Image 1: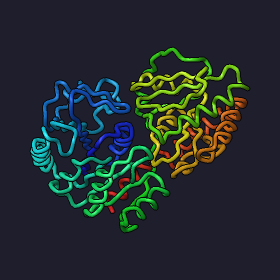
Image 2: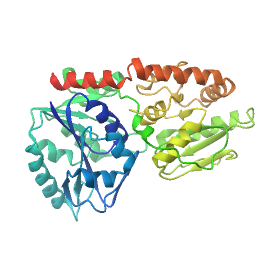
Image 3: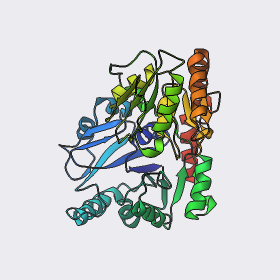
Image 4: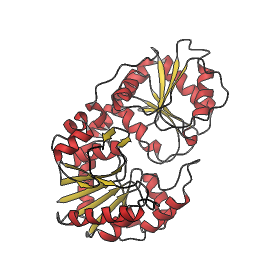
Length: 386
């Protein structure tokens, strides 16, 4: 079976899935990119030597993507780039030119006669693909079925509703999200499938880069936004640090923290893009990772942390309770409860044997549970073949 996976971002998820899925199908992965760099998650690709349009040359792609990603893929699947004039769907300087670039690329892609096209993520450019690229079986993984708090995007939401009018099938990462997707877009239940994401094991291809970090810390990492609950985390940490004198909090990620005027003693903020080598070091050295979100859809932070068997303390939102098994692979607390979060931080810091047992349980979840990549790719193959 020949499968084309068209990715509008989400390289951590896409590349980890692709490595394992490629054991079951003949896979090609196409990333839409623009500008001089594609910098997101695990990928910091230099695009300066990549021409506008479709690039399929393996040597050129490997040079752009970097050694770690090239070695992780190791020829298991095709990695291609489609470079557009602008990353915007409609742009006063590049809108029509973008259309021509994608149209020409689709003409080339049609020659491969793919059996399945799987879109991952969302973009205005998806409209071009849905209209121009013909294939009997088309699937779409939408990570955020609606905008997060503070990131409202009316135009994007309208486009996503338009896409659900096409003859495609949908994949969601939690049972909770499947049900929400069906209700939100009013689509037929038989068109929506739940397929859990495995851990983002691509990060294991990166050597840790030493950083100036405290000896004992809990970690928050990822894109910083209002819904991520940083103020709640700092409030909870300030309560706990009065009792645990050597505990620190590290916050790492790009974005506007919008922090309230808290006591910032023993809080280290690294407010920028964190490259994969740095992130590996941050996760490995932490006691646990904390995701105190006020709302959420799928969490790549959890899947990245699990890649290093690191327990996660999370608010009980969305379908997160489907992948964080409370008291076994991490802790769950009620959204917005600073006291609840403080209690979980105390528990894991005072009881290192709990963190050790949780790490073992996370490993088992990957080896034989719902996060096993072999089981996940088998399910993907079954859905593709249905």
